Every structure is written in C-alpha cells, then in structure tokens.
Image: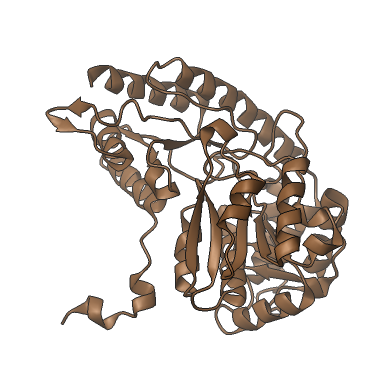
Length: 400
C-alpha cells in the first residue's frame, strides 16, 4: 500500500521538526558513548524551581487530577490577567484568556481559528520552524518577509507595506526572537502597529521569551500600544522558557473575547483542558518567587557574552549579539561553498551534518528558519560545554 497516498494532503504538506531530529540524533550518539556537545535544544538547562514542583506534588496529593474547564482553570486565568496588567500594562478579563498545552498549542489554535483557505500569513524570516507548518495545516499560505542581519533581523514598516495584499489576514511577530534573539523596540512596534490597524490585519504576538531579555532592555507587547491594535492582537506567552517548564506544557493566549471563545471551542474538541497538575504548577510559577528566573537570566548573560565574542574571533564567522532568548545566529556564508573531504558544503544542512559527524557538535541549520547562510546555536548549556564546542567548531573550520 502507498501510505503517502492514504495520508491527507494537508498533513503531507508538513515537514518533521529538524530541531527535534538533530537533538534526538545527538542524544542517540551520547547513548552510544560519543562525547557530543549539543547546541540544538530549545529549552533552558536549569531545573524547574523547587516551589513549582512542590505545588504540583500538592496538587497530586490533594486529588487535583480531574478535568478542568477546557480553556483552563479560572484561578490560573486570573493570575495570567494580573501578570498582563503588572508586566505589560494590558487589561484582560478571564474570558479573554485561554490556557493551552504549551505556547505552541496556543499559536496553533489561533492560526486555525483565524485563517481560511488561501488566506495569506506574513511571516518574517528568520522564523521559528513550526510557524510555516501550522499555516499550511490551516490551508493558508505563508508569505515570507526576509529580515536581514544589516537590520538586526527585524522587518521594516516599508517591507510590511509592500508585502500586504488583499489576501493578507495575519502577521506573526516573535520578540524576543527564536532563532535570532533580537528584540523589537517600542518605536519599531508602533510603526508596525500603525500599518496593521490601517489595513485591519491581525497579529499573533509570540512573547514566550519575554522574561529572558538582556541589557536593561524593556519588553514591549505590541497589544499595549493602543486599543486599536489590541483588538487585532492575540498575545501568546507561557511558562516553558521563563520558568524552565518545557515538559509541563502550559502556554496561554489573550485576545478579543470572540476569538478566544472560538479558540476554546476548537481546543475543547482536540485536547480538552491542559493538564490539571501542570496548571497548578504554572500558577505557582506566576505567583511565586521570581529569584530563580533572575538567576537563570544572569547566567545566560554570561554565556551570551562569551559565545558571541568567541564566535566573532573565528574569522569565517560573524555573529550579532542577541538581546533576548538563549540563541545565537552566526552567519556562516563564507564556509558554505568550501570543500571538505572532497565534497562541497552546499548548504547549512550539510554543514550541520559535518559538524555532528566530524566534530561531535550538534547545531541547527539556518535553512529550517528560512536563512540558509546561518546556524543556530543554543547557549542553554554549561559554559564548559560552550567552550569545548566552539573549540571543536573552530578546529573543523580550519580543516576546510
């Protein structure tokens, strides 16, 4: 039987996640006793803080193991409302909040809720790998808007204006960004906001890295700039990155009540509620002590400064200093096209394969983010591993 013919056209459009594939392969090599340095993982290497784990244990012991409302328990929604008010100057009611099985799930719900067949979704590149796949599942068309290193990987209002067509339904904005770590300023967001409100275009603002931000820079949510843009924005956030809770799978979204209700209807027929125990843990994360988060960010700053300086010391590589998240996105265009063991390094995928096979270093090729001249390296690993991994990368480059 031709199984590919049996699977729906919509699902056949989806590519597997290269980041998860590289991480899995690196783990397999480690299990085989190979000393692999992994720069691929998109999660903090810190443990979930103790008070959050205690809240989960208490939930289990007290029998909080049944269904909650599909869109999340009211107590957690109220805490999320307080978070938006205190951190982002945004006023939401619990009816304007949905809690989902991770921020990825929130984004997926929002895209499926907003997009019809043949709608266009503007997607700045470099982009997170799952965005275009989600858009395709919804039957919409991803329209890639290339942001350059010269502009700090951020789109300009002129670019946005020139990309909009009568079919444009939505813009996906990610700040701080995965994979570049770049952060939009208030002025930059204001210009984008003006264009979106003028044209009546929705915005999904993915703010999952909001708390992992550096250099005394303020995180600005585009929804906070004016009532007009708030009505068009679905703000997505969660506890995965800030509180090192990736496996707990709790994300949330805020937006106009009618859109959130539609997202809730969709969720009620797919996953039902997010895990009850994880919701209690997320409540403890939002309402509890924030010192573990501050300590984690302070350590990320040290690693960021070191990895950027070290990468820029390798003459074939250039790397901007990220302002948030925990990734660097070095340019490797001078390496692509060179020869290794008689084979031309034709793209970033081949370069990543060589790094893993020859140097035992796991990095993610830039092509999966829509930028083939780059690699993504996560510094959510120890300083010792960062130093050792960069040494191996430089050693391999010197052999080309």
